[in-house]
Length: 156
Image (cartoon, rainbow, N blue to C red):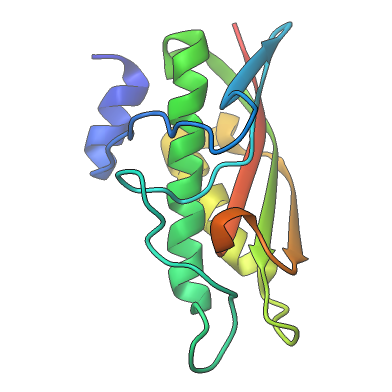
């Protein structure tokens, strides 16, 4: 068992299968010693766990739930990375995370939502999981997903 696989077990996390693309793109692409992921939705077993805008109030996805979906999106991204480099132990640095939050007009908690992705990367990778980041509110995301996360890593 690899070091990162052991860490996932220790954290009680399971790396999902790679989420098949919903359009014309690949889940992850190697360029030099970088891996770029496509935007990852929080798919679980081929379906979104929730849809809609993030905010406070009836009919909206709560910020706490959306943070969990950002975490799932990051795990989906790691599965995509593993599919192109073979082992997550090859990652030398998580460089950049970009998170998108489908936001109700008054919602301004996008950074807290995307902490779900950032935190799990830190839990898994420690110091090499520390990264630059953007957290952006948007009107709508593919399939009406509440969140989407993409990231860039280096590997050896």
